[in-house]
Length: 342
Figure 1 (tube, one colour):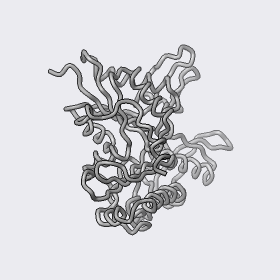
Figure 2 (tube, one colour):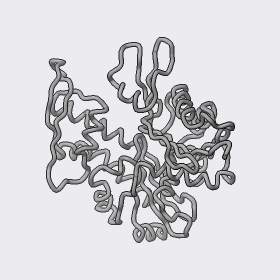
Figure 3 (tube, helix red, strand yellow):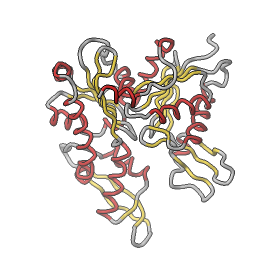
Figure 4 (tube, helix red, strand yellow):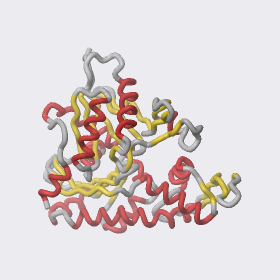
């Protein structure tokens, strides 16, 4: 029996996934914390806290402590991680070593915040891994060879795009346009079109059910309930997939433009490899209908969505546990490394 098991954490803006060595993904929870304002005590974390979003009494607030892939509320992130790690390590004698994924646009200050929060939540040592690298590992891409591979990871808060070759990242980019931007686009559309207000949970449900960034073969409709902005009363309206196609045009275009930008900044040899191997999409946002078709159309390179796209980063963190002893502990100074490359 092992005294402790190393774990990999996909610290996402929308969801947190934890991969335990030898067991696979053992925890998948929304990154939401419900706190009592008067006492500062954590009431709930994860899915039970997410159900409280927009439904809490005055003294309880449900917060999302991660924004755009990085920590925005340090104390809450630490408390949330602590609760999740307690669930897993209640019988362990030794604290685990932990690999945490961070966006490729992370600053050194943000890296330190992630390390500190994970240490205080109960880790013995913390190692960082870039999200697109972990996503490519989880998507079973061959990144150790001399051929270029491209991965587009659309999460909740950030979209990470990277070109990989010889076990490293040749060029990458991270933008703060991702799943949350599409939810906000749904809220803005409903407000403008129907004069009605809906919550984030409803917006996400609409996005998942009928959302698309490429024309669907046949139109789909969905009823939505919300609050009338003029009367303040409950109302129901029907929204169509073509409405959403219009609303999603701008965020989708920004993501595709960034993919083109990364291709432009890659060497001709790597671009030739990518056109042969295709582009792989991972992350929850990549499952929006037609995203692969849109990228294929704009880049003229075949694009496909990885199997189990949601879990790719967590699986990649899990795979990298195999060489945890050879990894560098602490910050990896991504921002500084990027500046030096330029």
